[in-house]
Figure 1 (tube, rainbow, N blue to C red):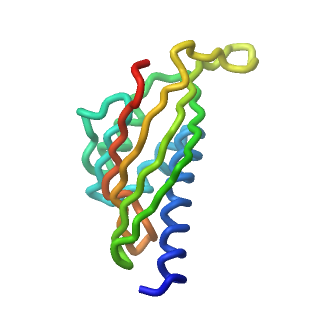
Figure 2 (figure 1 turned 90 degrees about the vertical axis):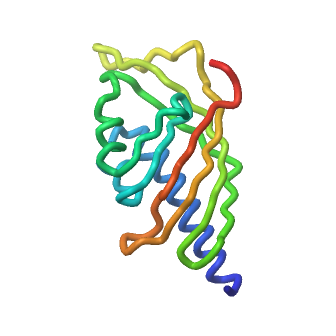
Length: 144
């Protein structure tokens, strides 16, 4: 594989990781679920031993979250390892800030236990719809 193709794959996978954080923070659960393969797996950093398997289970898991929670993810140290033109793995570090919406429209209150600091280890697959998460396993690096 030439360098131009490898770099394009690295960029597409990096964009996927960043897009996940963006649509997650926007509460767009349909968009979050669409970033996974149909049989994809998601293990959230706060519940690493209870993965959701399948796009519908991922969507249902996000829809069951309590209302009124605001999140902001910060992602860094993204490293994508291209294995082939259709398979890659990735690692990133994330910070998660959480808060609760307010009735008067002021800024959300900040959870004093935050930020949560953790990582994601990803298996990525190119599909007819572009690069998607085949597996996204999160974990926390420090106790909340």
